[in-house]
Image (cartoon, rainbow, N blue to C red; front, side, top):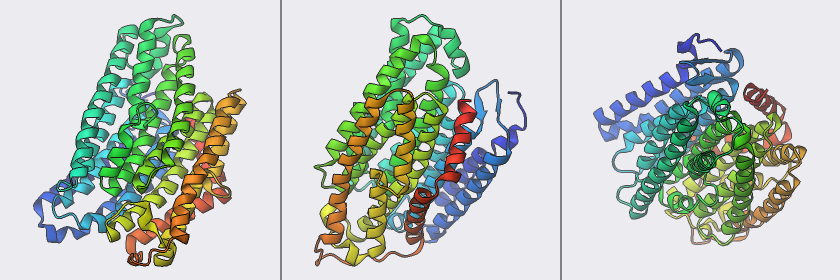
Length: 481
């Protein structure tokens, strides 16, 4: 595609970067007592950028610039919509929680925006170095956000663990990229497959393994998932939500583009396909089984997110527009289902100071809205009709079965049934637990809006998935005609 109108296609990224710097300056210059307006300011900024990005999806044509360094297509814009929606919901649900942090309150919103900017760069990257820069911008922001509760030993421990393991995964990814460059003389996705050709070699195998391992860490695929439960538990709950939802989607955006554009040569295809099948199967099985004994809601949702990564991998294995459509559709509805669950977890943690599942006892009596939203969100993640998660899993499993991979579809179906068990354990505590000594946790303001909005979208897409499905297929076809 020819280069044109770079300013128009980069408007969301430039606006986000500018707003992140403005919020950082505000946080540094104004006194803490005057920072209560930072949450509404951040939310309105995200709404503005999100509105433009929705317009961008339907009306700005596909293009690339800087010789394919960065792509503007519906695939990238779809993911940008997802990241901005996730960031907006996290900001809205975090107001009361962040207000209780005595210092560095102002920088929180700036870091949310820089992490979102990194995700957007990953989605549009047309070559490995640009992808890596976006990934590091996102990851470095998360290093700080995970360790944000500086007076909390668990948060500090989670931050250190994430830093060490994240740096290791980045090194592995970079080594895989260096092998790709050595084999092909290029880092552009469109040139790597033709540069590799049909000759299989140990170097091409190592490159495949290292790239999948580096991105697999960000996605929390088994066996690269061990960081997730500890980091999710120790991080501030709004950060855990953003980490589980948006950073995972960003890694999938990068992996889909890399895999379908780069690893479609004969040298990569068989190796990459086999690795993906094995990784997806292990991720679905271990993620769901490890979630069963958890007693902490954040650890349970961590293992749940591991299992969800396995379901999303199924769509990539299909190597088709239908498979990519399934990933895009499921990733979007995953934002709202997971955000509903985390909004409730954040609210309960803020009011009760606990993330233990037993402290959700009697939540149906103490906060009916929160209990209903948590129930709908968990059942959607389990894939129970008529919720949106059922439609998403139907798209994923039907796409991979259409390509002849029936075994992995059956594994996904069985593991979805297993997930119903541990999700219903939480529902049982909320509706049948006593909780007489626990306080009421009424929901107000932006948190209430976040819960209601996530709940309504989860129900609405389940009943009428056509508009989102059409957006997803358009985005998939812009990448895989």
